[in-house]
Length: 335
Image (cartoon, rainbow, N blue to C red):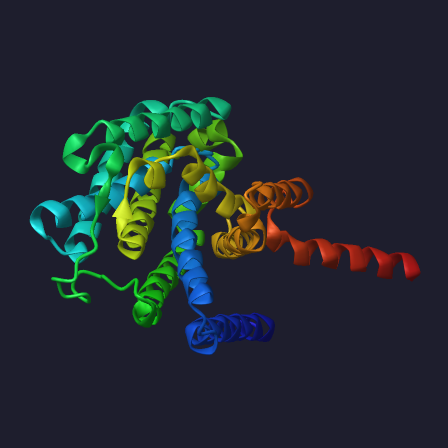
């Protein structure tokens, strides 16, 4: 290893360590309930964005139907607790397996489609999921399921939404985010990651060099579904309620997609950056303008998202590269 590469690796480790320490300190420094709630939501949407990034960012298959997997992640622990009092520590992993199985089954026909056709098909998938849950009386139908209970051990059943428990729940979510970042760092340099990038660049070329594109996309879709389901499971344990309108709407699918698009598709930290920006904007515009009853908070939120997507097509993480390029051009012209 050269000295330059050695220093680069050590700087990267130092940066990651600093960010981790800052993340650990956040709920201890900022003690307001609103801020702690926002930190938890940033973590949950980061997890969902990381999940979407495997299929939409690395493989280039833009899905607008991930609310289906998010809903599976929400309904599985909620239903198992409501019917059998099963702990979410067991139910959430089961939801992840169900989501992966569903992803494989629906992915067999859907992943044959490319481009806009695939996106539209996944959008229809979300709508079908919502109507299934609306008409599924065993799961509460349109009324949904409430999982709040004072009769169970709050730690075993992750009933940690009270203000004095938010710090612990934040650390649980943070641990999941850190584990997924470590996994994504590995995947980013793995053979599987390179295969996904090749498929994203040119699927026909990927097949010509021996990549089994159908199987690789199916594996990415299943992995993406599992992680998105995990986000849904953590979300339902936090809000302690689920219905078809909080779990399987098109707006949920768009949020999961936009988190990664805004941060940077196919990057390790893009979903975290995107989740931070989007959650901050949505939460604060609701506070600043939501009480007017005019919907101006939604207009501002939508306008800011459109501006970022238009002027930063590669996401917020592309800003340093853009600035570096501009400064280098100025220095070259001055010389």
